[in-house]
Length: 83
Image 1 (cartoon, rainbow, N blue to C red):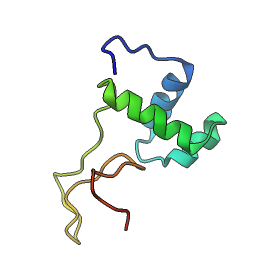
Image 2 (image 1 turned 45 degrees about the horizontal axis):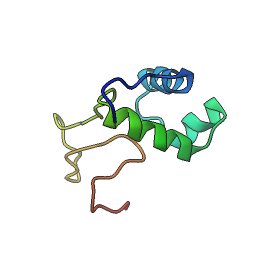
Image 3 (image 1 turned 90 degrees about the vertical axis):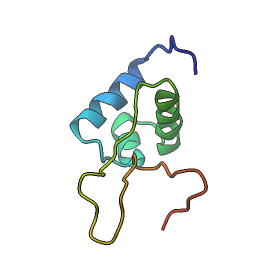
């Protein structure tokens, strides 16, 4: 992704909704913005690649069942499967 990535209206709306609640699923974002969850997924990948979104970690307080990292909804580390 080029360093001079320019945000469009949809990118700004996605970011605004995530600033309100970063845990929103892509499907919910898509419904609010009248696009598919897949469109949100593609846009988020571009925003991450451009360094605009860095992700979200919850490493300070591990989950009681041993989960130590929480990523952006809809994103899994390479080689990992959804539960």
